[in-house]
Amino acid sequence: NGGDLKLFHTNPNSYIQDGSSSLAISSARIDLNSASGQSMARLYQGAQVELYHSNTKRLETLSNGVRAVNQFFVSEGTISLEKPGVHHHRIIANDTGNDLGFQQSSDTGSNTNFTTYLRIDDGGDIALPQDNQSLKIGASGDLSLYHSGSFNFLVNNNSKNFVIQAKNGENAFLCVPDAEVALYHNNHKTCETTTEGLRILDGTGSTATLEVKSTGTNRADLRVLAAGTGN
Image (spheres, rainbow, N blue to C red):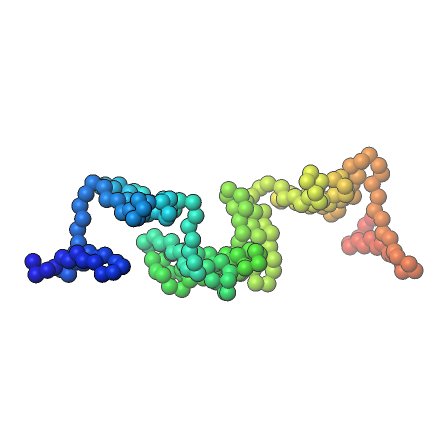
């Protein structure tokens, strides 16, 4: 009616032109192929839509989203992760230069006021650029590492012992919640705190000793001070 639909060729291209409102093509399956017969797109009734590159499927829709086959590239862009009523998240490709930033919005249900909480620098370093934001390790956030703005903290968040090893299997430092702190030499406990003070130990069977040494002509003093009266 009134020439709303036109099919014509203008060298070197061919055209289907709809001059009204919409162009509807109905079929149980629609294939778009190149002149050589390679698949370019396939559209299935009640199912997926597939996009191809050089006759290889690269993208398809799913009932719950989209699947990229092999690799998915975002060039100098932003990936937004949104859910109604909660803080929105996004991954930005050029946060402070060429760094990769992981951000969260300060307002729920909003795409404004984003803050970077994790950054992968262009050189490969990983940064948590906000104070008082923890790196949590373990299924229940058992170990936390953070900077308060004034101090650095490594926090044991459960009732388990905290151990630093000089190498795999060789203890150097042991901290027991609500109990002792111990130092080791070659994986043998040599010193531990007690409710009364400090105990010198030897785990090898030799006599435990406390040494106070000086260097050169300097004098080394050991003083034992007691407060109060009595022995």
